[in-house]
View 1 (cartoon, rainbow, N blue to C red):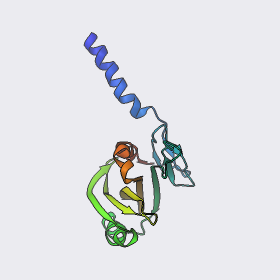
View 2: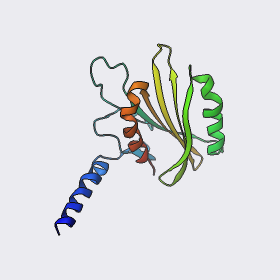
View 3: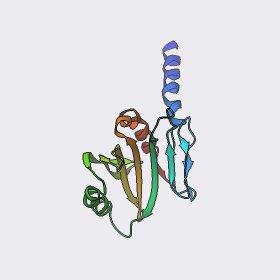
View 4: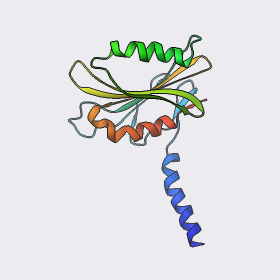
Length: 168
């Protein structure tokens, strides 16, 4: 009986943090995620935007996640991926370096993702993680952004929010 009670308590301790946060919906109620509790909600219209609070007054950038939807205009996930990611990114971002890219699923839906770095005009280096999926002729993008040195400590937080993504 003690083993059962201990197992039940441990499962609650590990599961509660996953479900302890409120799900946040876009204005049109079509997409949602469960943000990290301490992150600030900056959502606007149908875009979901959450940013980490500044760690100190010298923070130059707040790690964030942007979730948005755009018409796919009849294009497939592969077509949109090649158009926006493969063809455009090397020209859009200064000092673009792809780290890794692969396929996965979110909520049972096929997804492509990429992790890359770039340097902005102020010579700040960023690390970006983008997930893209297409459903019902809508392209969904989940864009996770951090300065390169902050990325390792926020990567798990990004992935936790991405895994909570749902299309309603």
